Length: 594
Image 1 (cartoon, rainbow, N blue to C red):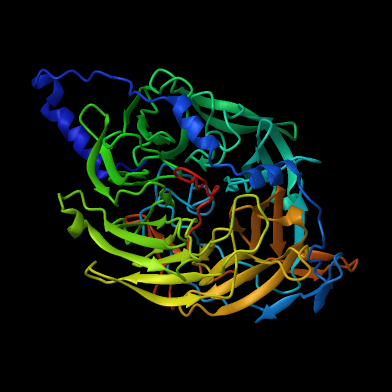
Image 2 (image 1 turned 90 degrees about the vertical axis):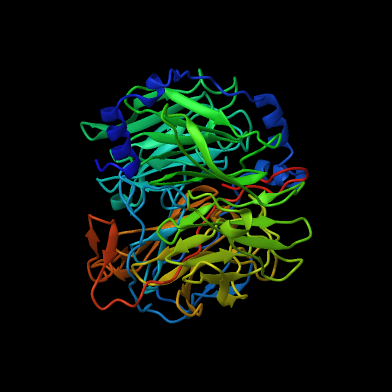
């Protein structure tokens, strides 16, 4: 396993002697404070009465699925007719260089192991291409007959199986193993500890796969569990392969909400009440601090981890943290973004080889700001650290609730105004690419599309050069609920292709994610399980079956820098819209975004 610069310096420090011992300083492990009851009182205010009613209403109906027939339109059960495809099919692939960021050795790979945000940087990129749009064939796998069980993220192991936590709002959620080679058959499932609140991020919203192919689940019982799928005589079952106890470190009732491996084989984690901790995987020792510099601070989203440390956004400020000589999390810098009473924030995204971090701030008046900052550990004034802080989309109709995507010096932001977790309704369109200047002094909008509406975090495929959206065409009458897979050209923002996927409320993707599998297959979570879309052709019996698309030229991974290159590719100075599973807008304090 590769060692980061910090790890090398730590070894050198050992050789020079224990600095803490030399100065008489003891590395005492002091658990941080924090009131879990106060936190969950705040969390409960995030659910509106309409959202609660929608969640309790059930999974909804399946309308029509794309059937691989190559037809021109679909007649929906509501009586409406919708086009089967819009734009250009087959889609023309324009491969890009892979994400110019070092691979995290603690995650399995860059294909599908970093969770809903793709990786520890939250880049929302994939090296795999999407469907060409030739005779699209959709399939869905349900995981429950009646209850909402939204599956996210979809983590692919070395054997090609998909692991996902299927979130239940009112009963214990499940860790499920799917087989993409056999129509996404469910191979194994196990319940995980029930959460303290229906919107408690602990236990599923953020799940990643480590370098051993094990889903990492922070549970509501104050544990970090590494699960392993074990096969015996053709039958699979989930086992807890390893676990770490956080109860001696965190306040009673407070659990980790997100866990990301660092570059040395250990783990960073956060809680919703602004605890930041670190687990030594070998010794099991857990150390944490409480970010309460300015009174009560909350974390309503995920965080990011790079080789240098962790990047955490709270309801008060943006932080960079590293480990001190005692392996305690330590604040390197803190940047306050303003005295805001009700900050609605996205997950932070690292980009430009880790030199920059971006996030959004949404205001109650329907305006949103995109913030870009320098990550340098050097002491900088707040003014010098800020690259830009700019309003996005139409004032009064703007909310960037999904995290922005990062690629090169570019970011892509999505407008989610009017959207709410688990509510199928009308919301404003909007997707924009913003580039940062080479000297990190300014930001500029390169293109903006105001025609496509999607609540689902987009995915940038460097394998085909397009931004992909699971888009929503509500249409007329109000119960159409038609969903399309939409591809926009990354360079120009042009909407190149839209293919019909499905209709019906059950096929709604409630701010989850979409991803790609080898062969040009899209897979994503829906209200009750997963849905996939592939290109198809007729077999000898006249039945549509998935076909594997010709793959772009092989990408070469440079083990020295973790970067990728390929011949005859267009320049990859472009960035993509990342996802961030957004949770609900709330009345009084910080909104939770996933």
